[in-house]
Length: 492
Image 1 (spheres, one colour):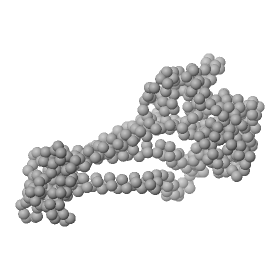
Image 2: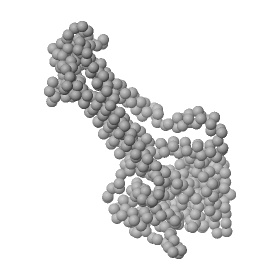
Image 3: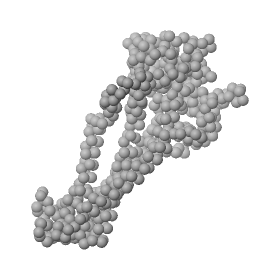
Image 4: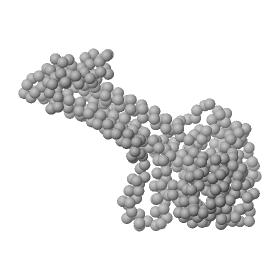
């Protein structure tokens, strides 16, 4: 099976941006040039390659969207900003490491460069930061500390509450929905919010150590610098020698002069106003920075890149909105050619893939919505490819009621591929409806939950859903953290 082009962070940003604009759009593709181009130009190639997975289909569809003239997507801004951030990390790391080393190597003739202080400033600070990061990581996986940043968003809302009260109710609702969507994206993509930051910090660390090595070697080659050691914690020459020998274990098997000898350690143990120092320490300092600084940071950088790429490969794109988009892209569609409707039947590969996704759907219709079971079954079959398992009336604003309906639903839940709740879009969304949908979500197993909005009742069906009402429901779903696919009824 041919692999699709790998996903990047910029691709995810563009995809989520486009997916947010897809909310409420059904399977029909009339007047959608990107979908038509995808189905005529890209879909056959995916079928031939046998790669009809959601990541492959969505990645190809995203490429078509980007080819549309005049369409500005935010992913390009992220890509530019991330490139500049890496460049700045390189410059800052090399500059800081080099300037710090140059400062530590200031030699006044009678006072040699103190080796322990040099190591503490160059390697000690790095080790301390890595230790703090390791402790936080252990706390996170054992206690879920810092695993959820929603309290930060809640704190931000509380701090700015005075300003928020000046906004209208609609504006406050919209802002709450934005915060909720941010939290939801963190829940969906998990560590993808962490690894780019880790990569940038390790790029900084690699170049920080390169700056140290370059400046150290440059100073050694052009200046006569002597090194010594003095410490309030270590007074014995033998202890200092053993510490240096222990640090040199990774390279002592192949590197020349891996560490000073005991005699050199003794000769370099300086006290002020005494001339006991030598140049035997500088190879040891270079090896130490290369091993415990540059090599360690390089390994962490490779590890972070591998984890980042692994997290990208594990994306399933099964969160709300994705199933609807996938069905619309690969399912049979009705398009208008010269004003005459024509049914386009996909190839056998697509038909087989769609048949594999078919199954039974359990439908709950709000009590204030009138629709025949035959009409509903036909719509579900034509637009989703599902068979109507059962249709029941439900009081969607009565979460503690509907005992008989919920009991029947629980019995059938394991065999269902979808649960559809039909709600009039003109109905004001209230908290009780969110509780009702939350109760359904807890027992729906692996089936998809679709909130299907309908317009005013007409003789032959339903009127078009008002876009303003649809926006209210979109914000309602986001604020209440409902993991549902919000779609609008459309029989065009």
